[in-house]
Image 1: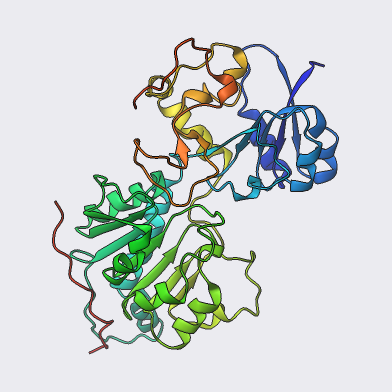
Image 2: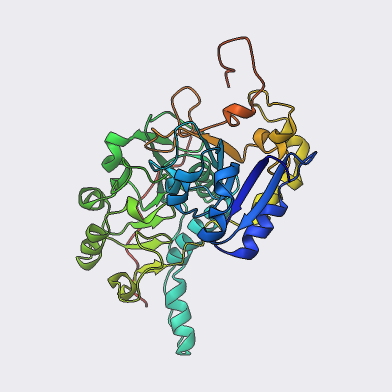
Length: 381
């Protein structure tokens, strides 16, 4: 048994083993332990230098006295933004993987609404022929709150449909994917112009409750809210009030403050609310492996600080520290921002202890169609 170890944790035993198989060591420097229960993880956490996990029990972090790096299996890292995780530990997350999935989810449900899918399926079940005009996404306005890699991917897809895209970030800096980017202080102005509002921000103390009563009131009565971020970013009570008062077109919700959503929750009752069980961006071993296998040489050439040649720098998949799918977290972040010249949440650099030492200080420098509001859902003719 080697003196160093990696703890792989996932509540599903099969998934834990599958993630563990992704770990490739040029030579056996680490023991790899796959665990699916807190009791099993407790046996190894004190000796683990690397934790590769999902939904890890936070109470065990206090026992991880040798821990140097946490690699989350998904995009959201709020479960690790806790006092139990020492500040010395590098925290990284998966990026560059879920954007395409979530873009299909968002645009798919937007099309579900504009193409009036529910109406026509209901008429089919009744064997009733009744024409009703669909709506167009083209010329509509989509507001993406949070322009990290997921938000920018959704924005690019929306532009392909001819939509006008607005963005909201902390800095308000321009990006190619959006016609205009607003600062957070101007959030309500951006919301007021949108036919669809998509939330892609990480959950932090400053984004918790970001969409409250005032923000929902700023939206058009015909607008739809799509949340693929975290449930707690939306004030659930305020959302229910808006829906009960018919002050919102509807909502597509993939995430909730409490998951699974209780069967008695009032959100289940609305015909203009779509509920999906947190599936907009599947996090599976296959999804993590795919981009590394498709273009391993391209990944290794990505612009990033030099990476140590030591074998432990490549234990999680193919040279994971150089891959754009793994980025370090700045805990002070509020909203996703793709700007390279301002502090941003996901920095394109490997964990600090994996970088090659350097004697030099310093850092490597790394038109839209006019929108028109969607009309209300027309009545069947």
